[in-house]
Image 1 (tube, helix red, strand yellow):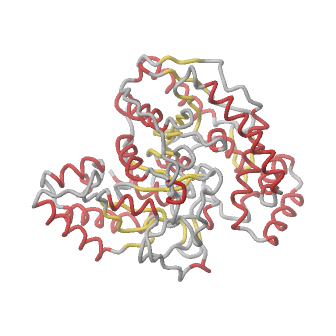
Image 2 (spheres, helix red, strand yellow):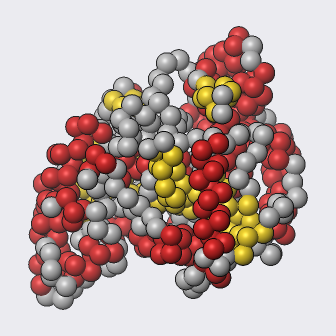
Image 3 (spheres, rainbow, N blue to C red):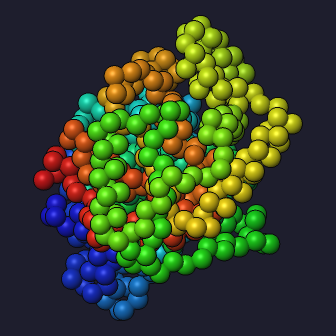
Length: 484
């Protein structure tokens, strides 16, 4: 049955509609996969199998009469623990929230169910969603399916690990600091950070804020680019509080061939150097794109100050995280950075922690600078469809849960860099709300790595069309050796 769970969500839905498989049998196949692999990976941390089976049997009855719920008819899936799922705990990995049981569905979950999906479980997260590792005191540590001594990424690490091992057909995550993109990269799957606000985050919370958190977005993860688009179409839509006057305006993109795309390149930066072997893989990927007919535009980048761009992001993403920190915690982080007496840590981590106490007038000035940079990117994308970049600086790194995150370093090309320096590749598109898709391009030292395809504001379907063309012409997801 394991081969069934690695088929795409779209194939699942079609097979159920054609009655070549029952929804209940497909669901059971996923349960078998979880029973087989979850003890080692620890990605799926909550399930309601009884309720899911009841839904699957009802879907089979509806199928028999020719009634289909939507494009995800009968597709079994999990969601990131931070999303409210009626009857399930929403803790964000914090023991103080262990008795917080959701009574309603988040917008994303409700939309997935409306499209026909069977949402049967939840996947692991780090405490308060602020790590590129996935561990907490409630549910423990999630391991990377390609090497269990390494992180699957975070904060949607459980999501990516579940998908790559065939324990879920689709997933949704959230991303302010690459929390969809780095797990997709580390686990060899697809992940999408949509344009800011085009997908409602209502119900991804402990206490509802009734507004989108700056920079952070909700987006899908999948094993195929086609499924990524399918899930995005199912969940897109504004919050109710905004939809009374506004609506999404996302132009379609019907391109199917790589030869139809103009691609710009930003493959490295001194702010966050890229592992040499990963950079070689990216450069070979560019060569393959060019051989497939894509027009590669070299030596042209958005007209911005890259260092300033990074600093703006660090402060603003810090500000967006601030509701999760007390004054005492902020003071402890600031003092800890100073005590470490490391210039790189002070510059990167210290700047992010400054954002935790940002005054509103300072936020306004930073927002002005951010919007100037957004206009520079708009001008850049007048002649370019996709800006190709790394997803992060390295493949998945070893578990390291000692001390606070600012004390952790990565060895990249023989030099030590703060782990948080890799946030550069998160914020390059994220701070100005651009859509980007991460997809797999192969292995480096036995670990999966991916590209990041950034598109212009509102051009989500361009990023998706590019990812589908890459998958069609150059390849995509492969299961980890654990599952073969």
